[in-house]
Image (cartoon, rainbow, N blue to C red):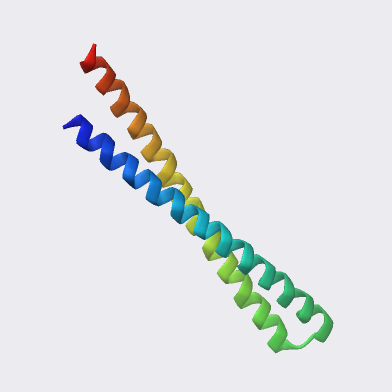
Length: 93
């Protein structure tokens, strides 16, 4: 039973870490685009350019929130995995 839980936690951690890597790449790309739209908005000083920047920044903010959520899930699962390993080692002894 513990071995299955450990295996499942390990698999899920791997998936979450892969997801975090993808999210980091997306966040970097979105942040670069938001910076570009900010500069265009400053240069053009048009309402449309300002709205484009606001929209791009909203995407960055949403992705940053998603990144935090994934990171918290990883931390939680790591703690769970540590607890399971402690229980497993106690049973083995």
